[in-house]
Length: 193
Image (cartoon, rainbow, N blue to C red):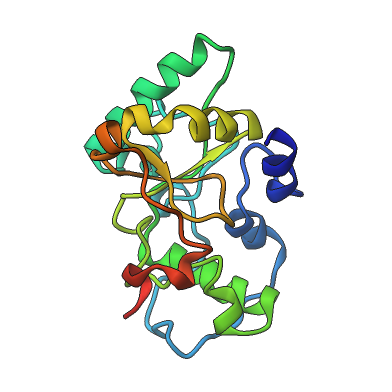
């Protein structure tokens, strides 16, 4: 399982998801469903960009501080218990501004060649759970492995098979286990406008 998750994470460093890696290396495209009226200029921490080394305990970072309080509390309980196993939860991405989400989507379209293929990795600002503060991407493959084994105890569930780093709060998972995963975001009814 560690090898599988490591392979799925591929080129990612502990503090980059496909979307954050894309934001550093890809030119912007302009998909038709991304509003033209948006933030101009460089995006930064105030938009949800996560600097290296951020953990679930870094309240000064908007990507962490703007997460749903129940999600953040569950993450912190899990991270505290994981630390007993020598595992540290880094935040690769948490809350994002709509402008940042739109930028990530444009970059995914440029990378994957179409809006349809980009949708397997990046949601629109209108549908993104990151924009709502209800999703977090956890870094280091060992943290993703730990959460895949133990996350349900905290209500933390991997939602997409293609994104072993993406977790959302599902309180019912504590008693009933995590719901069946979607293959990718295109299968998730919440992602439809």
